[in-house]
Image (tube, rainbow, N blue to C red; front, side, top):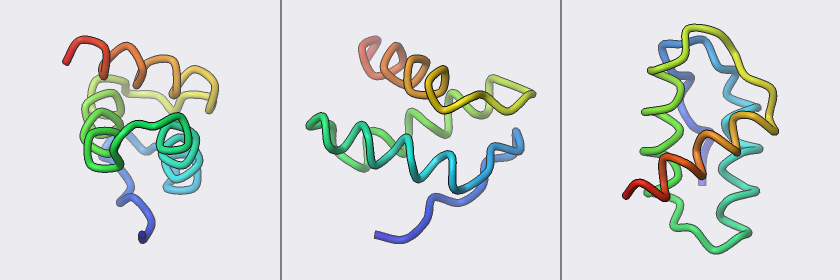
Length: 64
């Protein structure tokens, strides 16, 4: 797997990669997580700490 492209919100790709890795290790599908990261990053104008990014992505994934 390659790095997640940097979202327009300015989230660093390293941050996105770390969130992706954490959530895939929890059993989520990489494609679903990437889509959720893109949605969360697009909705937030500022960069998020990793912990908050993971929390927001989990909320997005729970919404389906």
